[in-house]
Length: 439
Ligand SMILES: [Zn+2]
Ligand SMILES: [Zn+2]
Image 1: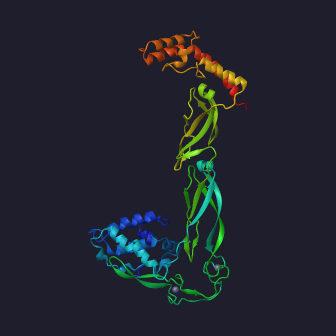
Image 2: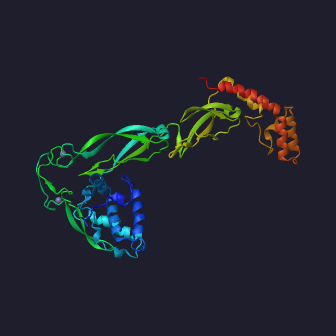
Image 3: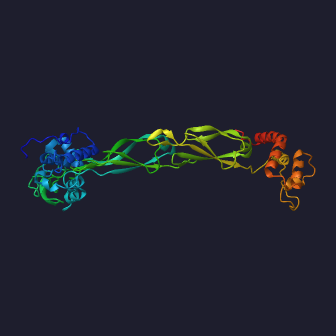
């Protein structure tokens, strides 16, 4: 079989070079289903074996890297001889079973066990980098350069581990073949697998004089700079993957990946909940009563917010689309929720006190209880004998006629209190002037 000119593995799978592992898997499954022995029209033993071999190489990161660089020479001996596989034994088994038997995890485990030796060059380690982010950078994204110390091939020995020009002797374990045979048991068969020699990592050579710069390891740690693109809308604990930015695999292995873990700092004012940003906003009670335009901090700087007249403390005012952008769709944004806290002044000047007392009087608010409370309803106003207002009379009527219903009472009160309300407004405006922050 070796005498036949081998077809390109990508071609066998009907893919272009650089196909992703998902494409490789998908294509293999589709084609394997077609060539399956149970498939009377299209079942094809030779084609199936060719396909299995191609998939074995391209589904394995290390073998694929080697094949991409050196072609069939790069993976020579590291593929199993599928000619030994009894094709007919697959009959009656589903594709998943066959794929499991050929490429399942149990079998891979069998490869890497046995004295700790491994087949072929392995991928380098994945690295972690903790990146501290300001709150606003997590909202709007950020581009940042980071420096990572990672293992790379030693430049002196080009990763071989041997002093340049020094002699290499033949590896005793594999007699210089770079490969050893290993018996592997599988679901349907028992066969010899040829794997890379664990002692010389497949080179077939033993190092006589180790390189002095890497002490024979073939690798040294180097500082490298990478650009990290933090997208808008990330949150604390998110991870970004920089493919191939990790350690280099030893002896020709591919690079591992770098995982950037984001640590988002708390903001002194903003609290994030999903895509929503919450902020606490104190306002004066006169602003709450009269309504006001105020400037509130948002992630886009101070923005004008209209506080409606009669706003209660701890009410929430929503500013749409000023929250956190959705990670995968930054044009969609959460809201900015303003939690209003109506503040009561704790120190009053003489003038302020006078105005507030006047206001209380207009609103018939008793600041003290003058006598025990005899009546269950309308106590405060019923006692105010000196007033001549319509208001007063209405209350009298109420307390004398217990039949009047509350909705009627409310209506008449509203009507009656109109002039008083106008008066209230005037004094509230004065109060606003007195309390307004002068800046
Ligand atoms: Zn070296
Ligand atoms: Zn060897």
